[in-house]
Length: 329
Image 1 (cartoon, helix red, strand yellow):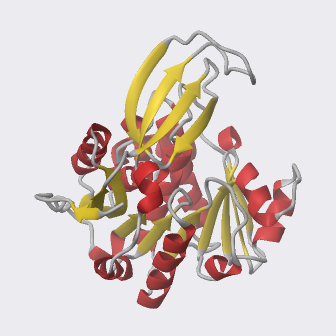
Image 2 (image 1 turned 135 degrees about the horizontal axis):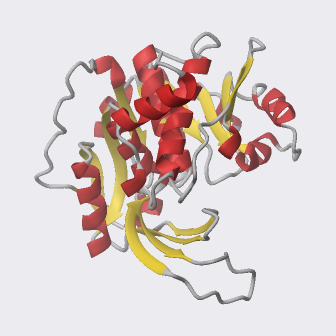
């Protein structure tokens, strides 16, 4: 696939009161989510009659970029879309959130898509066809953007070699590297050595750690042997933090009536990256406040249907955080 840069894209508008230190760069995927709701998720070989169908811009990278921008960051996205109609929808969605798209490129072939089924209990299952995401190759121009960030946010829906390359640039430039290890896979030491904060759910944690257990503490103990800091998302139970200095912190999630959890993890991770950028890092002293705010972002997202359309603005995150935990710290 050949690539060409996006023409005529404007830089995002500045946000009052936000310093350059809150710059978040996301290197990752952009997919169009094809979402069907149904009374229950199908079992293997079963056909289920659905209720509703929507096309929603998504992809973990694009979702987390939109989440970070709406949460208050000066956010840039580096990724690839196809030269099809889906690509135009993905580009417009990111631009509408104020994300800097100078690192977005269009490649020959289809854009990435995700087939998502959501049941009436807000549980989901997802199959992703990478499309253009599999063709993402970083350019020399991307190095400057990555190195100039306060936080580089990565996932695993684009080629692993490019994820590792971006992490190396960030480390050399002094940016904090946050890796959301999804979709789950074992990770090479070359990448893990560059990660400052690993963000995983319980399934992803087990795959990365190579330890299959229902005990979050055991997962955290193993993971901090691989990376210096770990944030473990626990769904409706909240999130936990661990580091190599022995800190272990758990934060409950806000109590809500969930409608759709599809993008809740991306809302959490995007907000976490913003909090890290604004606070200058993640430590045992700041972990409780950071995790509370990120949990509020995930919960606010889960109260609405859709993926990127459900990602909350900063005011909504602050309001739910204050209602659940007290005044925003």
